[in-house]
Length: 382
Image (cartoon, rainbow, N blue to C red; front, side, top):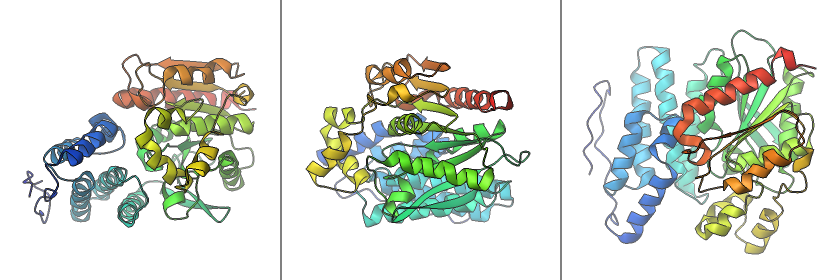
C-alpha cells in the first residue's frame, strides 16, 4: 500500500492504493512507462488535473500502482473534497479535478471493458455536478444520430444571448472534457463552445455505441445544424479539432462549407500513419471503429484520407503543429495548410512542442481563442 501525504481539508482520508501483484514484472513496468509517456505532466495539467494529482499519479505508477487504480483513488479524494466544500466555487473546482482524474484513468484502458465504462461514468457524473455549478450552467445535449446519440456539453458566456459557437472535438482517446480549459478561454472571449464526442469517441461510443465510419463528417454537420436550430439559424459555427480530431475537423470543413472557421491542432492528412508506425496502437483503432476484424478496420482507416478533399477547405484556417511531434508527423500535416484554398490561413509551429502542443497548453489556448474570437466576431459576420 502506497502512503500519500493527506490533504488537510479531506474530511475522511483514505488509505493509499495498493501495489499491483505484478508490480515488478517487466511487462507491467513497460506498460506503466507507456502510460507515463502518453500522459505526461503537461498533458495532465492542460487536461484539467491539479498539479499535485498529476505528480502523484506519475509517482504511484512508478511505484507499482496500476495507472487506472491510482487515477481512481485521486478522483475519489477530489469527490470527497467537493462534498466537504463550504462554497459552490470550491465544490465545482474539485468535481472538475475529480473528473480529470477519472478521465485520464480510463484513457489507459484501450478496450471498451466494463472497467473502462465504470470509470467513464464516474467521470461524466463528476463533470455533470461541476457543470450544474457553472454560471451560466453548462448544458448537456444528446443529438439523435443513427441508432444512438452524439453527446456534448454546451458552454455559454453570461453576457451574450446568441454568440458564435466553436465545436471542439478530440482524437483517439483525448475526448471532449479534456479540452475544457481551452473551452473556458473561448467563453472568456465571448464565444459559446460545444464540447462534442463524435462517432467513435467518449460517451457517444461507450454509452450509445456509435462508432467511427467514413461518413463521420455528416455527424459533425448534423451537430452544427442542431446548434443552429436552438441558438439561431444565422449562427456562425467554427470547429476546432485536436490530434485525430484535427483530421476529422478538416475533412468536415472540406465537405461542409457552412463552417465559418477551422482550427487543426496536431492533425494529419492521413490518420493511418500512426498505427503503421506503431502497430500496438491498433487496439485503440479497433475500439474507435467498433470492430476487431482486421479487414473491416483497415477498410475504414485507409479511406480516412484528406488528399482529395483538402483543397475544398475555404474558410479561415489556423493550424498548429511541431517538427518533433511523434504521433502525427509535421510533413504529413503541413499539406493541410499548404493545399487548403483558404485565403486566410495561418500555420503556427512550436519548435519544441510535443503532440498537440501539450507542453505549451496555456499559450496554445490563448492563441486559438484569440483567433476564433477575431474570425467569428462581428467584423467577419456576413
